[in-house]
Image 1 (tube, rainbow, N blue to C red):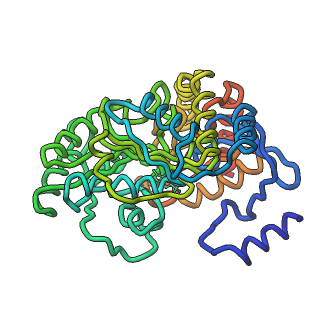
Image 2: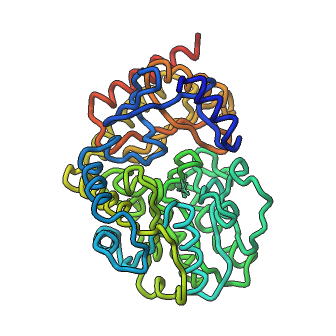
Length: 427
Ligand code: PMP
């Protein structure tokens, strides 16, 4: 098929909500390492990794080989029969996740991972109320849409009761008009009043992303999670940590984002980068919380031998190639470069994030969200052969997340393209 034909069929045969980036959609053909190639053969340096999912490079040889071998050995058995990849992956998760997290339930997406997490929290606490954060994203099921704190992604009217949204730790636009640290973490402390005024005094859980991904990499201050989780515990709630974007070394120096804040979740959800692009979701919990889900519950494809093998191979590459450390070192280099760009271009109002999860919020005067500049920056970077992502409530945040094995030269090349493209905005 030619490019035009693909675009035409996409519009004709897919739901119109399946939106594409760019004025003229970029039809991808193949990819290798940290590069993607379009159908006309043009090369792009990938700094978004299929939405933080390609963690060890496209079509990674080791991951592909493991998938290939497993496909020829046992492709599907269902969870009715124990098999090696399924239990080996569960054991691996228990080893690498923090604290007492031990038992896993596998699904096919982040959405399902969050569904499972909320279900077990409600069953364990015998309570329905769940607190989520504004600017959050939890997925596309009814429950996940209701948990999501971003109107653009909440397409249906909210019908699930017992979900309460509190302010997020969005320091650049503090919802209370305060400044860190003199704010005394008002956003975290507000959880107490929310529980006292919006619930019957008990909650099943707080669900939060360590860094709000879709929200535009909103990164809370270092004391935030200790504060908010200690309030949550006072009211009997469990902490569900959504590591769908921040997991697997993304934030640099630590395997999971929440470890940067020194807090142990009761439940953690994982997806995206866990299997380098093979569809997978996982919910891991402490044994007593996990075992509160009694009776029959099944995910036909959950823990499938091929996806479990892909995840194990991906985690092995992350460990063997020290990619958690690489994310820290390369992330520091990227951050330094972005801050230098911020000094040069007033359109960059804020640079935030951690490790290889870095964002630039584009603004006009008085911090007015500048979505138009973002759209133009997108077109310019595409022309120069660089893929980036977007996010934020107003769609004015550039999201950058290259694969974890990105090199120094690739970081420098991306910064160079961003510099050239930002310069073009002023022309
Ligand atoms: N949680 C977070 C933090 C996410 O970013 C996403 C996806 N963007 C999800 C959950 C849902 O994952 P999926 O699209 O795999 O259902």
